[in-house]
Amino acid sequence: MSNKAKQLEKIKVDILKQKICPQLADGATQLVFGDGNPEAEIVFIGEAPGKNEDEQGLPFVGAAGRFLNEMLKTIGLKRGDVYITNIVKYRPPGNRDPYPDEKSAFLPFLRRQLEVIKPKIVV
Image 1 (tube, rainbow, N blue to C red):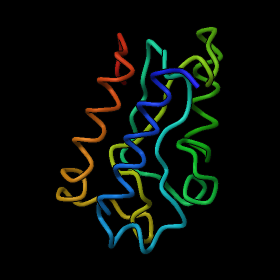
Image 2: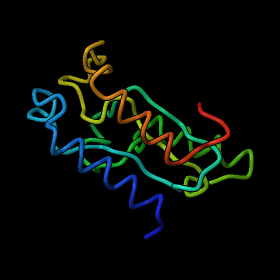
Image 3: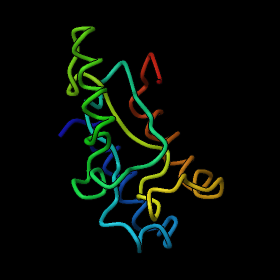
Image 4: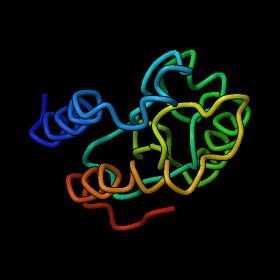
């Protein structure tokens, strides 16, 4: 495991230890932290996981993920070339939009992810 991968794993563990947004965690199947290349030059950030993401534990695996994969393919990239995450790391109930306080609670962890990866482009 690379140093960046270890640092990202530590951030994931910190979210769990600190019980960030316990009300969201209680209603979710699992934490959806991030996926892809820790050395990526491009990071894609979504708002929050949906049903498919919650079930699989990976960001952007539903319809939006298939669309993203196709878009990456058109520019000669694949999922393994980029890093994908969300602001909020648990699926909100009923796929509702995350509340501002939920986004605020997760923002420091997203910033830490970006500090570790050091991408050239954030989408």
